[in-house]
Length: 131
Image (cartoon, rainbow, N blue to C red):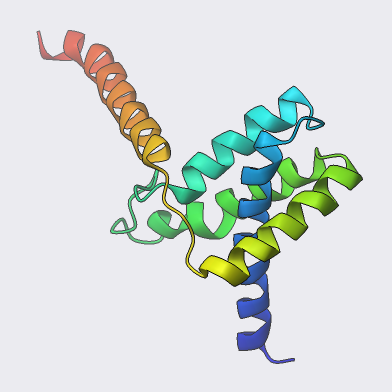
């Protein structure tokens, strides 16, 4: 297996596991802490807006390459094995039927709110320096 095939397989697993977390968030036997982290990760993964915009050199892709896969890995590890298996099967079936990943408007709103909160915090922090 060459590098290109490995990267494609890795990207497919990331996509599958983000959908797995989406289904796990609705599952009755998912612990609350796994639901909380999983739903945050899903909202962020499916959001059309990134926390670190991609046009920022190098840093713009860090969330796509390191942060998001790390959070997905952690959230998946928090799921009970039977719930994980069941939700992965649902994710595989959804991917076969729909192909493209869904979009999350809630995730986009969360990212915009986070950016606004960071901008407000920076404004309050910088305001005394401009008086």
